[in-house]
Image 1 (spheres, rainbow, N blue to C red):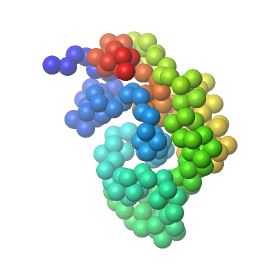
Image 2 (tube, helix red, strand yellow):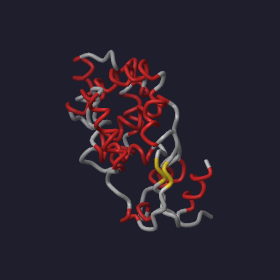
Image 3 (cartoon, one colour):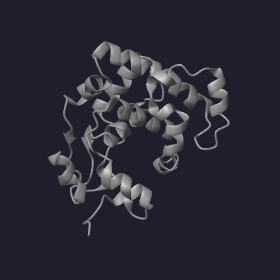
Image 4 (cartoon, rainbow, N blue to C red):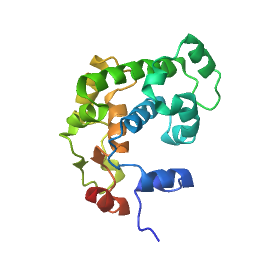
Length: 191
């Protein structure tokens, strides 16, 4: 039996519990997976993570399993098709941002050798291990997420404000924001 989880999981669906127990906060170094989380966090803007997580498989289907090179080639016709896709959030700005972000992502890969090398610079190449006791202590953004947001925007990315960047950092393990009483806190710190 699992011990205590982060308070934000109380009353969550089995999908959210699996996400918490297996993914949230685990350091990610796969460029494709980093791109997926960057896009999904941007899609979440103004919505709940639950809303996006429930549509994750649809996003993978609609956006070529987050293959940035394929998405970068999407045309206005692709955008029109995606705007009719009930399996994703049909927001023109977010869909167009995904296509533009794919182009910017490829440019970052070319400039730095990988997106992984670029993005992990914002935490000095290793996770920040926070020690929060209560979920209310978690910040919405940090100095690192603000710096990341400015740099991503400078490179042409959209839907990458500092709050979105911090949620991204939490998701991909750039920060360990499991509360210290959560069973995942120590597991993540050992990774």
